Image (cartoon, rainbow, N blue to C red):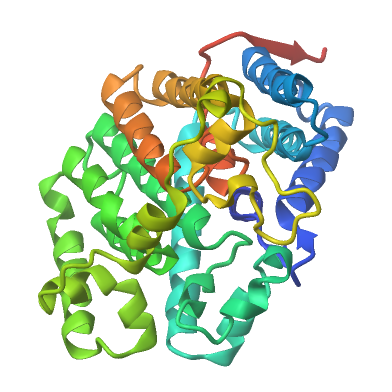
Length: 398
C-alpha cells in the first residue's frame, strides 16, 4: 500500500485532468492515520517543527514584495500555501508508513517500484499501444488549457508518464531523483542499494521527460560513478545512438535526441530550446527591479503561462517579483531542505549538498526550481523527513 500512496503523492497524477491524486492520497492517508490513532495501532506522530517554521517564514516573507510595491499579486503566496499543504500531507504519509526502523529501505523500494511503473508505461505508450497512451495522457494537468496543443505534436512523447507534471518540471524531478538515488547508493556502498537496471530505467524515463535531464544527468553519473553502472550506461548510450543514426527524421527522435543528431550531422546548434532561452528569456532587470522587484509574478488578467516580464528563467522571475533579496530567500529555502536531506541520509555530505545546489542553480536559469512547488520540490521536502536531525517533536499517545 505504501508504494501506491507514494506513487500518487510523489508523481501527483491528475486523473481526467481534474482529480489531483497527491491531495487525494494525502487525505486518504490522513483518514487512515486518524483511524489507526483512534484504535491505538499507531501511538507516535513525528512533527518536524523547524521545517514547518521555514515554510511559514517563506510565506510571510514573500508578502513583503507585494507590500513594498503596492501590488495585488497573490499568486506567489498561493503557491507556497499549496506547498505547505502538500508538505503537511507528506508528514502524515511519513508517519503512517515510514517511521519504523526500516523506513528508509521501504522508501527506496517504493521509489524503485515507481521508476519501474513509469518506465513500463512510457515504453508501452511509445510502442503505440492506444490504451497506455490514453492512460498517460489522461493524468496530465490541463496546463491552463494548453494540453491539447501538445497532443499530436512532436512533443507528445513527453506526456507519456503517470503524472500531472511534464516538460521541464518533470525533467528536473527525474534529475534530482537520479542524483538522490546515486548519492544513496554511494553512501550505502554495498553493491545492492541501486542495481544497474534501475539506473537504465531512470535514464530511459528521464530521456522521455526532456533534454534537461539528458544533459545534466551526466554530471550526477560522473560524480557518483561506479563501475557496475557501466552496463546500464553502455546500453542506454547504444540505444540513443541507434535511434539517432537510424531514425533522425522521426518527430519524437528528432526532438528528444536533437543534441546528439546535431553532433552527428556536424551542426553548430546545441538545441532549439537553449537558443530560445538565451535569445528570448535571459535579460538583465533594471536596477530598481534588482533592489526591490516589481511585486509581480504573473501578468494581471493572465492567460495560461503568462508570466510578468515574459521570461521563463527562474532567476529573472524571482528578481522581477522581489529583487535579489527574494532570489536569496528562495535559494536559502531550497538549501535548507537539501541540507536536511544530506544530514538525514548522507551524514551531512557536502558533496551532495554542493552538487545538488549546483544542479538546482543551473536549472533555475532555465525555469523556476528554487522553492517552486512542483513535484521535484515536494519530493525533496518529503525525503528530508527521514531522520532525526533538526527540531522534532514526537507526540505520543498512552
